[in-house]
Amino acid sequence: MPTASTELGRRQLLFVQGGGPRVHDQWDDKLVESLGRQLGAAFEIRYPCMPHEEDPQYAQWKPALEQELAALDDDAILVGHSIGATILVNVLAEQSTARKFGALVLVAAPFVGEGGWSSDQLRSPRDLGARLPPGLPVHVFHGLDDRTAPPAHADLYARAIPQARVHRLPGRDHQLNGDLGEVAAAIRPA
Image (tube, rainbow, N blue to C red; front, side, top):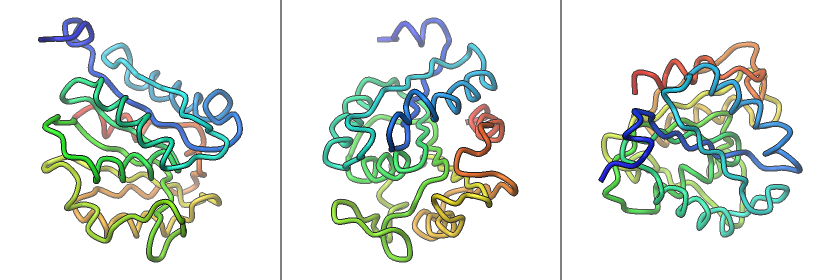
């Protein structure tokens, strides 16, 4: 049965915030605004505030994300920023779903695992790409001036998700300088 957004011809997009104090309302909201301006009214952007954003924990964010994912239509676009992207891709890799998402976009995502950040609660498997839903287009965007998650993390994702298209953006920081124009361009044809 079509949902209201489908009936209105709007495609759903889930944006998962990064972690840190007030990130949802004072940092990543600017990324969501940029994406909304670029994509226009054709998209319904969902931007939930994640639990305990100041100290993101996989065990707390996973059930919240699973609930958000279950509420989406087929062909919805998934976008995560920073640690939110890291958690999102790992949640997708752990679940089996019949839902067909339109694309997965990781923005300034730190890689947690061999060669990247270490964590007691999360470790991305070497075969991360093979664990994602088959046929899911994956884009990795990383600013080359990112001082939070080093640009080399994009290369780690390229190895772990060989089907991913990696976009290295010169002169861009962890927030991609507040401009998600390239992300929107990648999403439109998805």
